[in-house]
Image 1 (cartoon, one colour):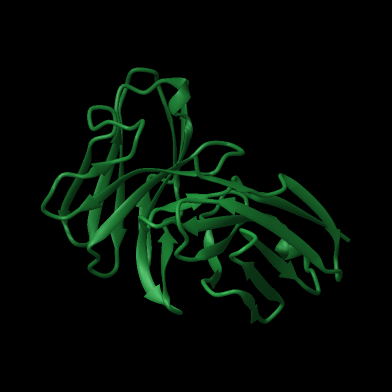
Image 2 (cartoon, rainbow over the protein chains, first blue to last red):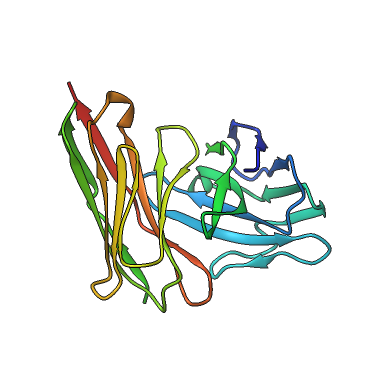
Length: 116
Length: 109
């Protein structure tokens, strides 16, 4: 299984500012996934980050708001730009690990953002 | 549209058994996952079902009926540390994961 280090673990941000979340994996992976989890809601996939190409964004998420970098096979960043209180959420980085006949998602500990 | 339904919250007693249900309507099916998420922590993988039937893993079992679009997670000999949210997720025909909102399980002594 992969070990994922994600930071910051939490932050309080001012409206209109931007914050970058970092995700480091202890092994090389092809795809890294960024999720958002709002209070009491399900996990929502923001985008899939592939090394060497632009991230693939899900419906409702755009690159200008959530720019992603993937400089190598073990690292990715997600920036939440021009934040508003609606962006207050937990942001999770994840990777797929094969096992038991399935590709299982392993998650980082998450970054809890509060926007004032 | 694609949809996964789980109860929002359940309460059970320490030492007892609880069954958390999950029904799904997705575009195709390529496996169903259960994850456990303690408050303030990341989800962790519990079980995977792709064929009909029961998968047992210690105190936890997961059942799948593809024809009914139904799964359940069975937790036996409940312990206080089992208090957590349990997330059901289905991989659709495009290999996208569709997530349920999770069931918050409260264990009482």
